[in-house]
Length: 303
Image (cartoon, rainbow, N blue to C red; front, side, top):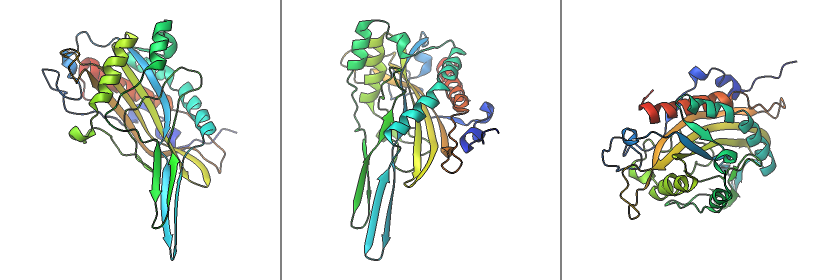
């Protein structure tokens, strides 16, 4: 008997119908002098050809609820258990990496995994000792406040087992439910120049690549007492050196090259009632995200 399909697998079955959207700051995309948080891709000469996938991780920002009834108030925060998160990210990764590589390859971009870009001991020491800088604080705990009580739980960021990735911080996803985009409508208040320069310049230069790529899958345990899990969003970012940087004193040495996002709006991939857990068609999502990114970086294609 065939395994029943999940809502996530059904929604992503046709790669041509997957809605991959841009999600990176607008400021800088048309700058002729290298200003702004995002690069003007027309200034990239040569175009990126060798990029390092430095991060691939599952990200559960936690869910919470608060209730009040009479003289009583309750608050709760919960997220995916560590061990199950490891199982989930391993499952997603196994079906993601080849489509990711193939999507970039269509635009002559070679996406390198850690076993490929960490080809010397010096690079390994640099990568695993790299201390990321950020102008915004990463939220590693989430709190739900009730009338007379509050509850706190840690968030979860977990990489595929023994694949060599690091869970670098790009943006905080909100508690309980993600939004359609994180950067498109945020303006200056949503940007993080220390982060883009740290990853896009310092890390990329140290690894000897043209740019670095971060990929994360937002999943959530939607109910505290039910083992149901959803994909809320999938984000892919490319960051690299500012082609117009004026030297060590320049505070804008790294920029977003592109960001793409699939907003799933909590599509279930694991159901406690049926016992089905499926990572099917996550590869289609990665194809859609990587091809849209490659087409923008190489051709400035908006669709």
